[in-house]
Length: 417
View 1: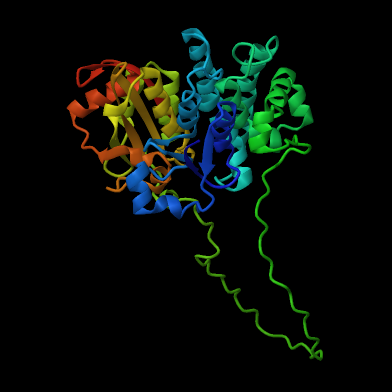
View 2: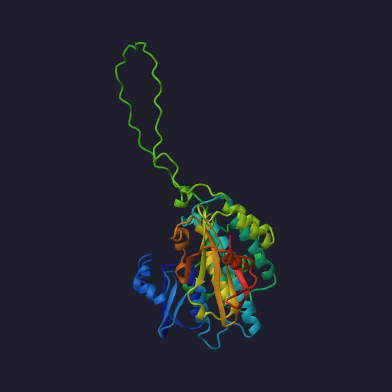
């Protein structure tokens, strides 16, 4: 019996986990083979149905609509009442979610920052790559310590934690985790090998081949014009002549280095954004906020935007709301050079909201492309604010993760820096 259809581009590893879960639970899920990335998911009909352009997206035969690959896998895992994938106790289910969220919110962003420039998705930066590799190593070390004496992440059988985590690491083991790298993490490598060779996993993803040579970023080749052979001319007797002043070559627009973003064309900000991020990271929040208000120029350099999740009435568990906020942060890599922001979750289970503030480069009334390009952008309301003293107090609370919002105590949060 078909339970629904998943829409995505072919061989998307983020779809693997949902399809593998369906295999384990004996569910039939269709994958739309007519989906065209960037076309199908940009239509008005698509946005009206799913609320955002991101993929994968799921439409159940009963009308259930879900976006986010993890949420789809979670839903399918729970469609079978006696499923072995979701844990046999509340503690087991919590541990399953622990590892799913650890990989999605910590390991995946680091690995994506490493791999995306190689694939051409984001600009390459050597310092960012080096930091991303080290963060990936640190998070893999956490998995390594856990898996040294365990076959599976939770319990004694495959669960959603194993399926979701293996799918998240699929590209890493295929592209950049070469043999020397894998030697650093023998338990993780053994566990990954076990999971991807399960019959239900292979039925979806096929035979897996480990990376032999680590993929590296390759700069695009510069186009060179073919030089024509010079025609030989009869030599003429040179006559002495007065030396003429050398003609200065006029630098053209084509000669000038092209910015990666139109924001790079703005005059240098009086307050470098990186310096604010250091102040925030290295000082108590009240000290950092005092420094911010003394140094930020909101007339020429920066604007501040209030951010509110559009579907707060649909939020349930606090930890799930916080992971949702983290999902937006994970998709803002293009904006890292131009923005800083915090989203907080305020309230309690089944009565909470996601809200926050972002500092953004430039003072235009339209949000910058580096943020609007994020898949989750449309799920939030973004309003440029007039920063009054009263507004500053609210921003101070959000950036400190302290106090309350509309009478709801701040319970957790995520910061993009």
